[in-house]
Length: 132
Figure 1 (cartoon, one colour):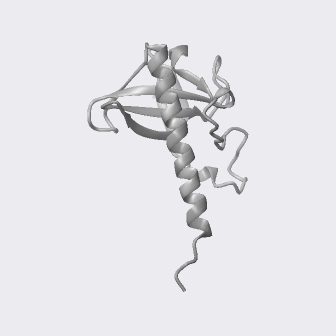
Figure 2 (tube, rainbow, N blue to C red; figure 1 turned 120 degrees about the horizontal axis):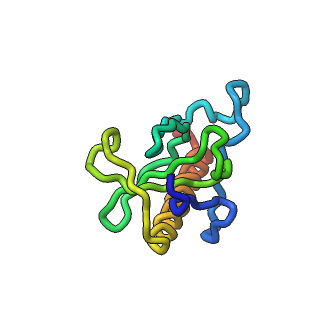
């Protein structure tokens, strides 16, 4: 797994505030059990568990982001791991490392923007009257 694909939430300067999934277990009531856990296999064949954060389209390509769901050497609990998707089907697409640091930063900032919009939309929805 390429270190260039890691971006740290705490270092984000786009103003995003994301929930982090680390430190949760089956008994907590924060809703983390609803998160999708995926198993990714490294080039060496090691299987690692991640929370699937989401997929976005940016400049005509699709990118998926993941957070560690277990302790992984060299990766902090709140790192965001971003890959480019090759192929049209999210289920079968290959995850490619992003070699260009500038592009990686752009994609990371776009993820921050999208996640912030989603969180604001969810918050606004919870404040709206239920139509009665």
